[in-house]
Image (cartoon, rainbow, N blue to C red):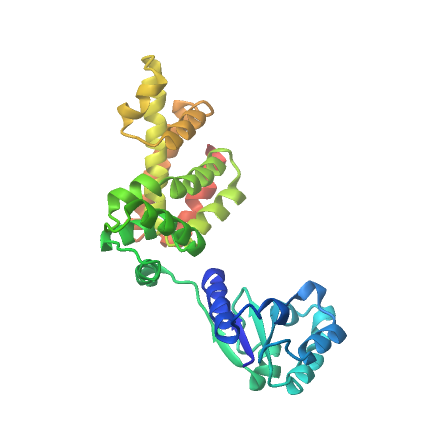
Length: 323
């Protein structure tokens, strides 16, 4: 069984590799029959020797080669020159050795590595779930972890964490432990998970208000890739600026810091601390100008005067220059 397992879904790839290990080994014979080789330390004589080694007290040997093929496809001379050697190793691979190329990015079918060696192995792409694909992934993961969750809680987790699958898995384990045999509901998610998304939003808006347009663009594109929509990002920025304006006004009346959260309807200590920090850096006039620009751009997007993907970049660029 020789394979290429590739894709940006690092979490599910790791689970797939664990499943393969379980299918090949038992009774503690994995450690003596597993070799993991990273592309940066690849040496053909050593790889040839490892692949040819007879399994020890087992019927199988497993060799995992990490991120070599994507580096071959990148055209880097050091790696592209060994493709013939890789083909030769696959041709002469003993039946007791299983070779798996693990690539943490999607390989193109037209790439030279797949063209060269695809006839010697199976190819399996594990994609990162996006949009509507994320909810069934979360539901399935909860079932695997022997938990129960409502559809509304699933949607809430998808909104808060996007498609950061490893983080979702960690939070699901925490929620299942907290809820026990009870069904996980939206209130449980909001209690235990909400700060994760807030951290990403605060980081993006911090960059925006500190006039770091390149970092801001990268941060907001990360939110988009994690499942957020342009509309939701505009709403995030709008809400954040509005809260900063409220805090600036409330501070004039000498309200106790501990009471500010109650006045603006925020219960998260993390969120209050970040808002207080930001409110010290930007005056009311700056925030009002930003809010007006934001409303105008949102109107132009919704009325079809400008494409939303172009609009979000213009918003971020203009706001970071005028913050």
